[in-house]
Amino acid sequence: MTIEWSRQAVLEAVRTRLLRAGAVLEGYSGVDVMAESDGMLVIFHWRRDPNTYAIKVEFPRGSASPWTGGSYTGLPVTSPDGWAVDFAFRLRLELDTGLVRRSRRTIRDGYVLLDVHDPPNLLPDGFFIGAVLLPDIELPALPDDLEKAYSILGSLPASVSPPVSKVGAWLARAGMDVTIPRQLIVEVRLACWLQAYVDNARGEPFVGQAAASWEDEQRTIARLDLVHIQPGVPSEVRDALVRLVVCEVAEASALCVVTAVDDPELHGLGFRPANGGGLALHTRSTEPPSDPAAGT
Image 1: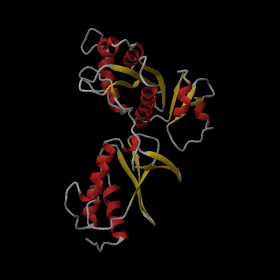
Image 2 (image 1 turned 135 degrees about the vertical axis):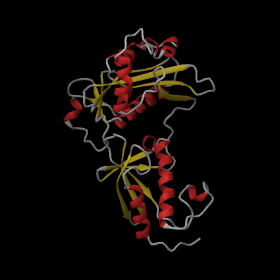
Image 3 (image 1 turned 45 degrees about the vertical axis):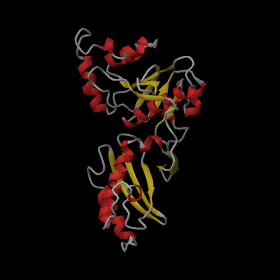
Image 4 (image 1 turned 90 degrees about the vertical axis):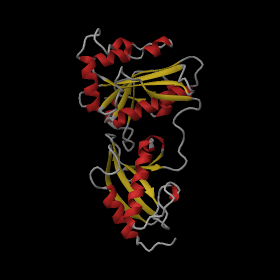
């Protein structure tokens, strides 16, 4: 069905919907919606990630809902505001299923333009990666929640439930050393701890792990302390563990990830020699490689 809405009306509706406080979902903060010759540019911040992100959106050519061309609801929209509401729900779903992490990226005018079409799979075929859970507490990504979770563990002796000695016990039984991440929990410095396992109905065997910690109280610098895969596991699993660690700490405010892990494959993931030794990677995609913070 042909529509009679002007582009300006659609633009204003999308701006009203996406730029207000609490729009879309927690972690999303709208910056601007700009008109371009071939569509709109939605610019936003995501969680505590230091980058500014943007996605291109075509102006509607008909009354179909932006929910996958109307196939989700099966109903047309009747106004620019209705179209904007449906687009906000679509964006919510996309963000909630990893839009920022899985999209291809292009640097443009100081922000990161996300290509949402046919994104690559972050997880190697046949494997899954997820957070290691604390007993009765899922390890959150945001610093405020981390402090709450770790204050419970850090303020209790090991004999009191939930004991740190039980965290990651399944990884230890699989032959992996969990000493470092457990110690980071006790020190209230653990930024994230991820585990890799075979993607099947049992979620086993466990085949790898990675852990990162906070270097400073402001949580602007994270350290990749550990990355390990079991013998015979494809190197793509190791790469995916590192990439997802970087995503986790970036979304929790890290500007830089440093590491003493000596692995040439980290160069292929964006790590570069740091002035003070080891390797460093900027989480702000527009950061120049020569920035002195790389030596932090």
